[in-house]
Amino acid sequence: MRNFPHEAGNWATYAAIPVSMEPHSDFLDNLSSAFSSLNLHVVEDFHISLTKVLILKHHWINDLMSSMRNIFDTNTSFFLILEGLSVYVNEEKTRTFLSIDVTLGDGFLNEIVDQLDKCLSEWDLPSFYESRSFHSSLLWGPGDLYSEVSDRLKTLEAFLRQYRIEVRVEQAFCKTGNKIFSFPFQ
Image 1: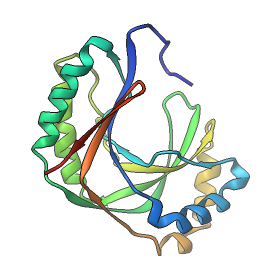
Image 2: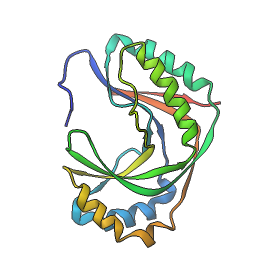
Image 3: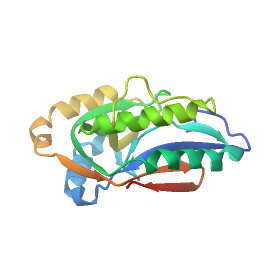
Image 4: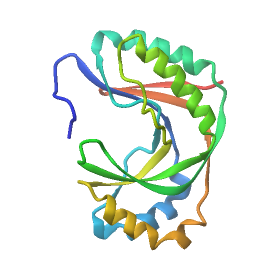
């Protein structure tokens, strides 16, 4: 469900860091089973958002991608640690997400987001959330299920303590409409 109306020439856009959950399929299977009665589903693409979803004019795409490339080209690869789960509900209250939190490496992410925010301001595009919480969504469900998911999460604390995921960050990407731009780090 869009939180903005479709308008010709406007492209939904966001920048993120991809997260590979392939080595952790057992964890995802167990998590999915634990929340199946709440109608939660495994997300299709795991990532850590670096921008909000933006409305980008088509004629801005090449210039903005060039500016983003300049930002990402200055970064070297780094590691993140993901552990602990949090529940999020989108602003429109149409989706609930169960996410794994970044607990180490968020300093690097904050630096990148600061640079992206400065870049986006040149196009009068919104900056990232003031209160940042870096995470990768694992499961999602329709509607506002915050209370139900939070209650179920409390019963799984012992199961969740054993999971700590290390991610090597080697690139970022920007998805705009049906196009994906990849930005490898040094």
